[in-house]
Amino acid sequence: MTGGLTITTVNLSAPDPLALATFYEQLLDWQITVAEDHWVLMRDPRGGVGLAFQWEEHYTRPVWPARPDAQDGQLVRIDGWLQNRRSSGKIHFLQVRDGSGVIQAVMSKAAVGEEMFRQADHLGQETALSVVGTVRADARAPGGYEIDAISIDVHSPSVDYPITPKEHGVDYLLDRRHLWIRSPRQQAILRVRHEVINAIRDYFNSRDFVLCDTPIFTPAACERTTTLFPVQYFEDTTAYLTQSGQLYNEANAMALGRVYCFGPTFRAEKSKTRRHLTEFWMVEPEMAYADLNDVIVLAEGLVAEVVGRVLDKRRQELKVLERDTTKLGSVLLR
Image (cartoon, rainbow, N blue to C red; front, side, top):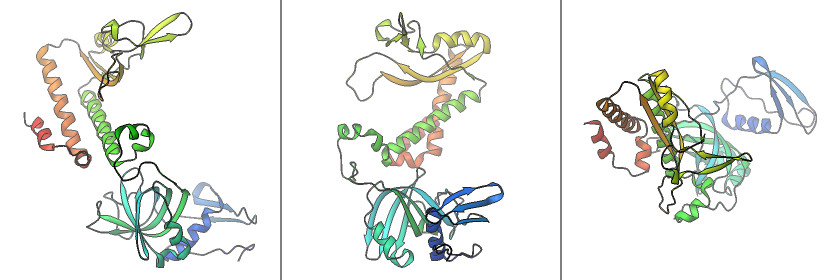
């Protein structure tokens, strides 16, 4: 007992899970400053008690146990959001999403105590929380691992989250787009898009193309003048949102030989379709001393490269999106 506060001591070389959880919970209430060489300065805001000691973290943070470097029995901390929760008697099953994936944390009343178990019993969907526990290999789990939780810390409880597991209409979801992107399908779309963009850049960069970013504001039309988006440019000038970087990169190609631009493009075309050209991203390569056959080879190679990268890196996301990968695979065989 120090200054009216009980300090739990823990053997870091062979920590007892329950004692470790208690020690961890105490640290959350303290004002902690980490200096060089792992020296930690701690002050208890309730009593002004100060401690200074050398500390080596007893858990890995952050970590996603489904990654290849995860080890059975490793003590970890997951910072994320509660995607779903179910209970069975004296056990809670918490589906925790941390941005890299979802893992199930199994919390038993015997491991965390009555109070913490009761707290977890009322957590709402998308509650922001941290879970500390040990990794346990389980072939039945989606990622091959689960976490045996020994402690949770609720950062921000969620009440009446509007996007529940039931079906919702597209208009309802679009009005809540900032929350809809937390769903598995929307995450899969963004990860596939990320892979496509990386593949496109890598394809041109590996063939000695130079990325030349072209202006978003342009003084004139590159395509049809009827599809320009006008923008008031200060008091007496009108600029336009770019339709293409082609005119700029034709000049760049005369200096650098092989160039490309890749960025947002705008077309003022009214449309009520779900996919339209009002705003999109476009890649535009330009080559000096190239003929039609060179262009065909470059374009076919780009498509095959992008498809191959997505199949190699994002097959799980394609499965979430229910895409027929056999059709994509045929692109690589041509």
